[in-house]
Length: 134
Image (cartoon, rainbow, N blue to C red; front, side, top):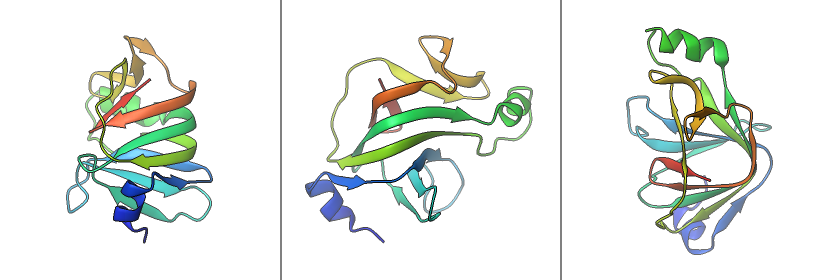
């Protein structure tokens, strides 16, 4: 397991392709970021109140079939994530800018300024708390 204190103080860099998603499952990792290495399947949970993430070379991904079912009333389950090449784990910081949102109860896709941005590539995204910013 990664040392979170080292990560915060040294702007720790996580490499390889990673899935980043906000965990809404009950338990000790509720409302934490889950970062999963897509190659090794290793993962960590990070408290969004303790750090900000800089996501580099990333794409917004969504299971369209599952998100449509949730939009139509099915129970929520994991169906969206950010796929990124690198992640910088930073001390918490306030970020200004446009936010990217995902809530399949409201819209069955990633949304930026009301537009569908599923599968859109971004060079850099940043987190502040549970929010993602362009």
